[in-house]
Image 1 (cartoon, helix red, strand yellow):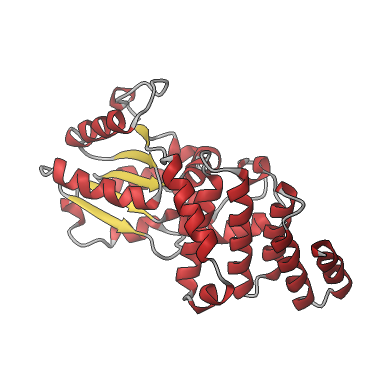
Image 2 (cartoon, rainbow, N blue to C red):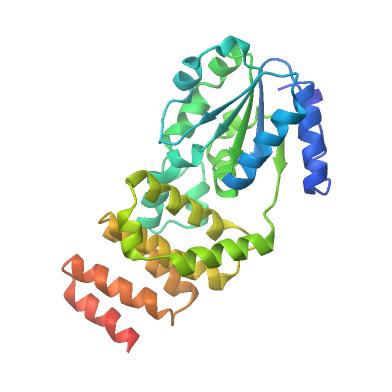
Length: 288
C-alpha cells in the first residue's frame, strides 16, 4: 500500500479523542480500496460506527455484520446490494469465524506463541482466505474496508494473516475503560449459570463465549476476574457437551488459582460425564 496513506505515526500516544479525529479525517478523504483496522470491543465498535455515520455524511457507509462463521468474505462482499455505490464498509463479527479455532487451541493446550505463530498449528480458514485473495479484494472492490476487531482477533491478523494485514493503511486503537471492564466482568460472573447458558441458542452461546474471551484477553482485567471468567467459559462449553474443551478451560483457571474450588468441582462433574471416574474423584477431593 502507498505509505502516504498512513495518517499517524504508530508510536504516538493513542487516546480516544485523538484516535477518533484521526479515523474521521482518514475516512473523509478515502477513495478506492483501502484497509483499516480498529481495535475495540464489539459494543464500542457499534457506537463508533454510528458516530462516524453522523460525522462522515458525504460517504456511502454500509456495515457487514458477520454474525455466523464464514470462510469466504470475498463472496459476501461481492453479493452486497448496490456494492458499486459503497465507499466505506465496516466489517464486524469476524471473531465468530475464529471460534472453532479458539476451541481447538484451548483443547490442545496451545501456548500463546503456538496460537499466533504463522508457521505452526495451521491458519484459521478465514485468515487463509484473506491472505490468498488480497489482490482480488484490491482489484474488484473500490471500497475502504474497516475491520472492527477485539484485541485477540487483531493479534491473529498481525501474526497469521500478514499478507493481508500488511496492506493496511492504519490501525486505530480504542482501549477499554478499566472500570467498565471490571463492571462487565462482575456482571457476567454474578449472572453466570449453567441452566441459563443451556437455554441460549447455539449462536447466543458462541457470542457469549467470545464476549467473555474478549474480557479475558483484555490487558486491563485482573487475574482474579480472568479465572472466574474462564469458569464461565467452561460452563458454556459444558452445555454443548464440549467436555474436553470445558476441562481445558477449568485447567487454565486452576493454573491461575490452584484453590479455585468451583473450577475443581466443575472439572469433576465434566470428568464424570466422560466416564473418567477416578480423575473425577481426584477433582472432587480438591474441593474438600
